[in-house]
Image (tube, rainbow, N blue to C red):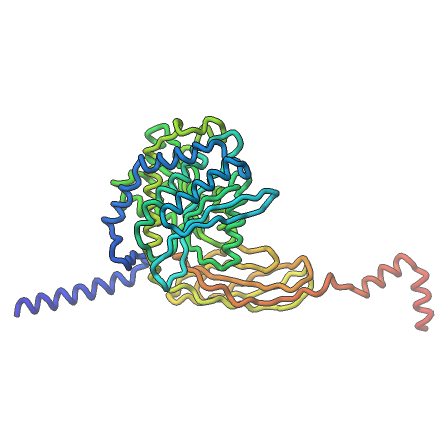
Length: 436
């Protein structure tokens, strides 16, 4: 009898605990469908990313010398990266791009997720090009070595969501390769949830530099930054890094931001003294520091690709307002959506004329958002909007809202007549003579 009472009390306690947990605002939780990835497995992956693995890739990429976009050295380095990804049994392809008078190729390797109900994509990226006459050990051989090391470890496991490992070229010309990749991903409707950009993670010359890593983000991407910070604390004994969360800074993540995708930028705490010089060589880097930065990025990517959002995304937004008008005049539109858990939402607007409004401030679910826009050219346009809740879950795009701008500035006949009469007074006398 006593055993039955104890069992009943235990069950009641578990029910109460479960109810309490489900009511918390914890929106991303582990979901290891293959039942293999757990905390011990994550620790094992962290340990696999050792200095020897990392340095091997770094030496290989630096051996090509300066890798200025469009040169033979850059081309050969890209081929090397392609072959390394292929040896890992990943789905590999070249992504050719043309922009700004240059043409080159990105290398994309895909590890497909095992959850057939998920279309989520997580990207880790680095750039393999350099400026002229610079071997680019840190900028960005250090990021490429991290990219290849992480791919080498992760391809042995299964993850719920799809991961893309991408090496970009054209970064030194202001992110040409990633610009074209992000644009095409946006046009294809790719559901990219997070982008982890790794650029310069190998320079640390003092014990203070050695302890920290900088993480840059925009406001919508803060949730990724928060996750990285949390994981750095959870696995501190294996990574030994504290994260310094900062504002925006440019690199290959920038155009993902432009197209409404969330992303963060990992970079060394102390900016490299030999940046863009012939002295950006391996001997100037701290390989232990670079490998620990890579461990942290690996851990973040594993957590993202293995987890699922506990809450539902916002509903598809609705748009209302005028569907025709005149160019150079301002028109008002109303956007609204509901979020199933009544979380706050933000909106991203594509006006269909090449301009986009970045994520708005957070607003209550169901509250109308008023916004204005001016079209500068005649034509037919389609406005699209998507919503995102405070935990990063995005809605589908709204149904396109069509608008036609068929007219130029209106012709004001009375004003024209008044001006005409002012310049030619005799016309006024003729006009009145005809009337009377």
